[in-house]
Image (cartoon, helix red, strand yellow):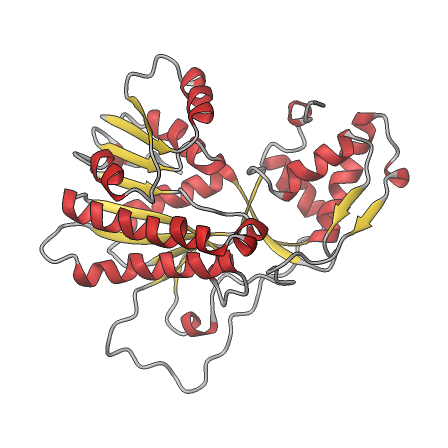
Length: 340
């Protein structure tokens, strides 16, 4: 990917900028010659760790705050050119058992970002969404679908403000906090067992770097109201677990055949198969080479009477899963989790 010039000499705000994806965005943005990169997040410990890692970067600004706080968002957005809204409650079980907390962060927080951006005259706002927003069966997915819709509808009521809004829709980001790859490696570090909800589950995977590339490309290309979706590989969870066990067991002095695999069942709100594009979106999606683009539906758009769902991509083989993990840096020895 070529370096996008949209960030040069601009002030960028990253909400949730100490999270797995947000912090990688911050690192990458600092190398693109911005005027300033502001990080807004709630966790002062994570902010301290990121600030120590990036010590000496004068462009970096650390702001403690919550997207639920409208006034704090307004202050953080003063003088900002671009916003990447990555703050969210992202874990399905946590949202399922604390639904209104998910609404407060993922819905009200997103609306706060929208309104503050319009008031501040921000140029572009991009929110990070998830494939779980497609025909959602859980609270997290439903709140992220609403967040996407808030972004799209903001184009209609922004008035004379120049602000453009769009969303990016991710699958599972390899190595993000609480995701399956570091979870399995931590279980292997303890000698097992390795837990799997349902080996027949399918999921879309993408490396963190690819997720950041998608965000940067979307910010450059957006006209307003779109959802950008990377063409991601699809894996069977049982195959992913087997590849990780085979790749890592020996590094802990274990035999792969001796590692117990414990099936724990589908968690509350989980789907067996995720999708990237809904049937209602499939008839108007645009193929943009490495990504699909779903434009904002116009008031006079008429959907066809018969709407065919998009066919999911084929499942990766185990060798292809190994190659994907290797390319993402997750078969390197330095990724071994340390025992507490």
